[in-house]
Image 1 (cartoon, rainbow, N blue to C red):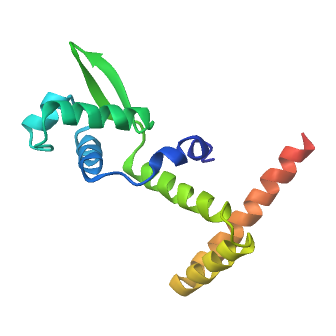
Image 2: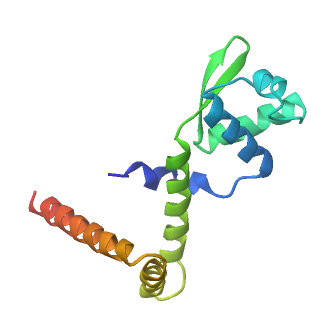
Amino acid sequence: MWGWRRTAAASASELGPLETRLLSALWKRGNATVRELRAEGHASAAYTTVMTTLDRLHKKGLLNRVPDGRAYRYSPRHTEAEYYCLRLAGVIQRLLGGSAPSSAPLTFLVDAVSEHDARLLEELERAVERKRRELREKEKR
């Protein structure tokens, strides 16, 4: 279902303040050039700084870009909700890949979910069952 997360989770690491501001502006606007973002006050930094920052976001896989005259027009590759899913996926991948016993992050997750909302624990159980069925079906093929 969320297969795109694996490929982009690493690119959704913490962003700097200017990267965050520009990405937020693009979510609101849909797309823009460096000149448009600066003209609307989304970035007071120098033109080349904004251009470099947008290029960095593009290289991280967070923005699409198409030529627009002598410049580029940038647009978000993911919705804001998808981006935050990517960030969460990256955190979980780092937790599971760390040096702690593999069950420790899962135990913490179950504890945190049950403290937050017991109904979420039931949703988590259904999600685990759904994933087990998917894996069994995949093995049969």
